Structure formats: C-alpha cells, structure tokens
Image (cartoon, rainbow, N blue to C red; front, side):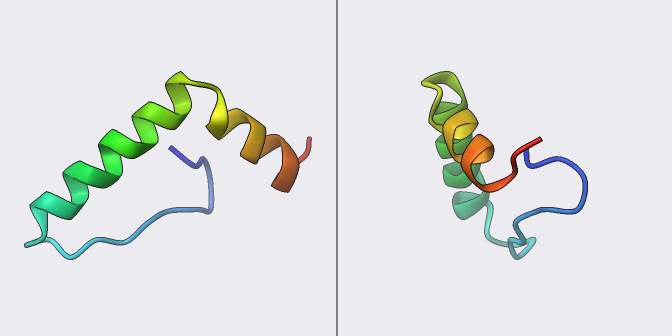
Length: 44
C-alpha cells in the first residue's frame, strides 16, 4: 500500500489485526483519504 520504503509490521499469528489493517487501508484508498494524506506528507 505505501510504496517503496514504507510498511506496517504485524505479527504472523495476528491474522485478525492484519485483516482489519488491510480493510481499513482499502477503505481509505477507495474514498480518497489515502491520496490526500500521501500528497500532504510525501509530495512529488
């Protein structure tokens, strides 16, 4: 989701947290929030 050099670590045995993070990231990408945050903190 974040591109080169960025990531989120989740313990391998914490499948519930991984699913919640993936769902939340998909939601903010779908509604444009991700792009607004990305543009603010990582301008081209």
